[in-house]
Amino acid sequence: MQVVHERDGERRVLASTVELADTFSTQTKGLMFRESLPEDYAMVFEFEDPPWWTPGVLAHLRSIHMLFVKVPLDVLWIREGRVTQVSTLSPWTGLGLARADTIVELPAGAAAAVEPGDSVHVEPEE
Image 1: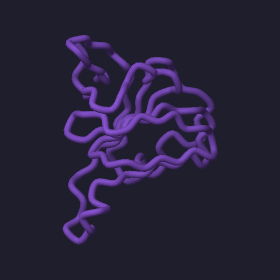
Image 2 (image 1 turned 180 degrees about the vertical axis):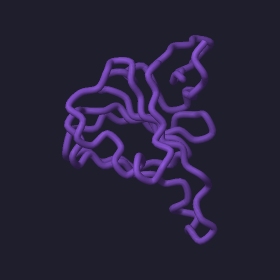
Image 3 (image 1 turned 180 degrees about the horizontal axis):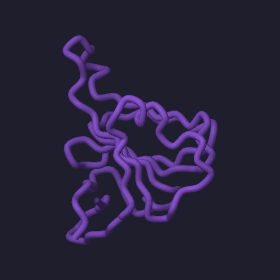
């Protein structure tokens, strides 16, 4: 798998080593306790629709904390294939919140050219 960024007809691979956080355990742990990340690495969190009882104002809000995360991260919040927010979060103290159905965590600097509105998606490697 790879994470691909597209804008204005340009296509760029952000990460070719992709780990899916697809269980409760992997989503809870995320990137905590890791000493470093490869340059071409991404952790991808994909979320189902919010429960029916979630108030509309809170629907699709996803948060990221950096407690026990030892390296800075670029975080992309994505909704329906479009980036809604890009943040660089600091180790231990960073926090982020935005609407998303997918979150991509990358080593700091990897998403420098990504802006809200851009297309980012996960696809099989070519």
